[in-house]
Image (cartoon, rainbow, N blue to C red):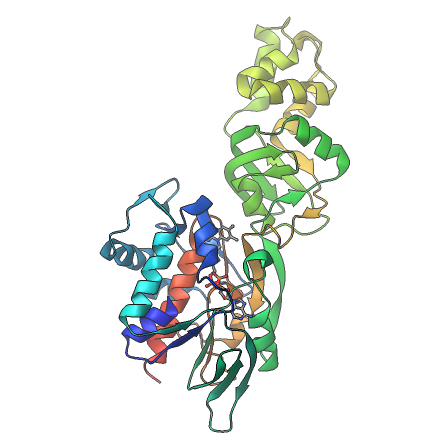
Length: 381
Ligand SMILES: Cc1cc2nc3c(=O)[nH]c(=O)nc-3n(C[C@H](O)[C@H](O)[C@H](O)COP(=O)(O)OP(=O)(O)OC[C@H]3O[C@@H](n4cnc5c(N)ncnc54)[C@H](O)[C@@H]3O)c2cc1C
C-alpha cells in the first residue's frame, strides 16, 4: 500500500520482502475473503500506549478512501456484520490490486530477498544489504508487521531495526488469539464443543465485548474471546455473561412460581441451547424441581449464567494470534508521517507499530491509513 501510494506520488520505490509471495496475511485473512476495513472505524477501536497516535492517520485516509480504491479495481464486496467489509470472492483480489497499483507506478518489487543489514550512511542515506545486492535510499519504510503466524514469514525485523536505531519497543504479546484453559475447564469445553452462544458478553477487568462465544475442543474461541484476549493479562479472570439481554434472576424466580414442578434444566433450555442448558444445570449442582430452589440457590445459578468467572491458563500464542499487540513505541514517531523523531528518513507503519486494532477489519484499516500518511510524507522529502 505504501509502496504503491509513494510511487503514485512520484517517488522511485523499491519494495523488498523475504517471502516468495507478497501479502500472505491478506490471502489468509477473513477466512480467505479479507475483512479489509470497517466502516465504523474510530480511534476507540485501537489499543496503544498512546491512544491518540492513530487519530491523524485514520482521519487522513479513511475506510471510504480504501473502498473507493477497491471499487476502482472492480472488486465486489459486502458488509457481513457490524460494519465489517469483506470481498465477495477472494482475498487475493486485494493482493492483486495492491500489486497492480505498484506496477502502475513503476514500483520495483523484489520478493525472496533476505535483508542482511540496514545502515545509515554519513550522507544521511540508508544502505540496505540484501541477498539481492546493496541498495541506497533516502528514506526507509519498515512495514514488516508483527510476530503472528511465523509459519508464513512473520519476523521480529521491525523491532530489531527500531532497537538498532535507538527507538523504544513496547513489549509485544499475541492478541486476537484463542485463550487456553486448565484440564478441568477443558473437559467441560470439550463436552460442549461446537456450541455457539450469540450474543454473549465477555469481560476482563473493565473491558467487555458483546459478540458470539464458541466452545471448542481447545477451550473457548469465537469473536468475543478473540477480542478480550487483546486485553487479558495472565492470572486475571474472564467473566462470561451467557444471557446478556435477559433478566435471569427475575426469570428464574418467576419460573419457580409458574412451573414449580419443572426441573431447572427444562427452564434453562428455554433460554440457552439445550446441550449447554443441561450441562450448566448439572454443573450448578441444583438440577432439581424449581420449587426446591431457595433464593440463594437461584442467585448462584443466575451468577453462573451471567457472571461466570474463568481464569485462562494462557493463550495459543503467536502461532495462531491474528495480530501482535505492542511494537515500535509511537511516542518516538510522528503521528502525521510515521517518521522516527530520532532518525530522519526512517518510517514504521502497519502492525509493527504499537497500534493494535480490534477484530473486524480495523487492523487492515490501520495498515492502509498509516501507509497513506507515510507515503504522502515521502514525496515531500
Ligand atoms: C489469520 C489472520 C487473519 C487476519 N484477518 C484479518 C482481517 O480479516 N481483517 C483485518 O483487519 N486484519 C486481519 N488480520 C491482521 C492483518 O493481517 C495484519 O494486521 C496486517 O496484515 C498487517 O499488515 P502489515 O503490512 O503491517 O504486515 P504484514 O501483512 O504482516 O506484512 C509484513 C510483510 O513483511 C514481510 N517480512 C517480515 N519479516 C521480514 C524480513 N525480516 N525481511 C523481509 N521481509 C519481511 C512479510 O513477508 C510480509 O510480507 C489477520 C491476521 C491473521 C494472521
